[in-house]
Image (tube, rainbow, N blue to C red; front, side, top):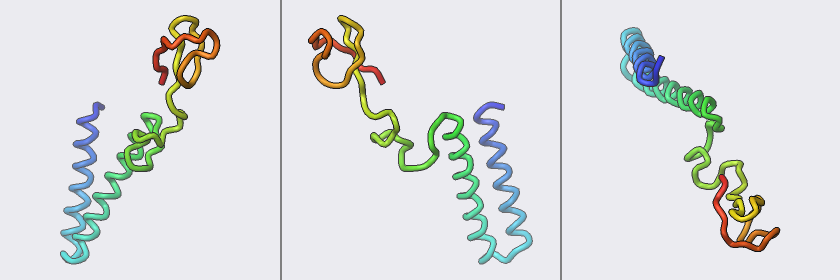
Length: 101
């Protein structure tokens, strides 16, 4: 099943639960429960999607703001191929490098 199909299934499940709650419970009880269930399903979907992508599923932007576990950027020297961190290559002294994420 593709991504759009999965989203439609989860929307349908959320809608069915909401309608069932509003049918059997009074409005002042069903509304907060419906909102809580909708948010819970949304967080569950997000956590499952992040786990599939290899993320942790927690935190603000999923590690986009430097919180990821890579430890920063390392470089590869274009001249000799040595992997290093910092300005110039410690092996040959060249400043020609490419970023390696």
